[in-house]
Length: 50
Image (cartoon, rainbow, N blue to C red; front, side, top):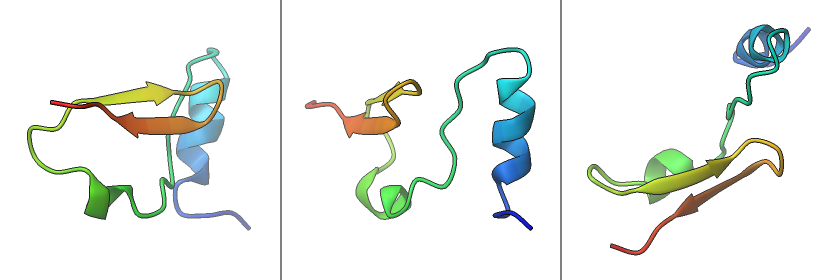
């Protein structure tokens, strides 16, 4: 058994593509028009200052 988005991370791993899935409360913290930096190697998502 896996999380609903675990298939996406497995598929992305095959061709060595970094993926951000299941980002917790990101949907509440990231607003339309925000710029973000996603670091798949470290597993971080950062909202950049505007």
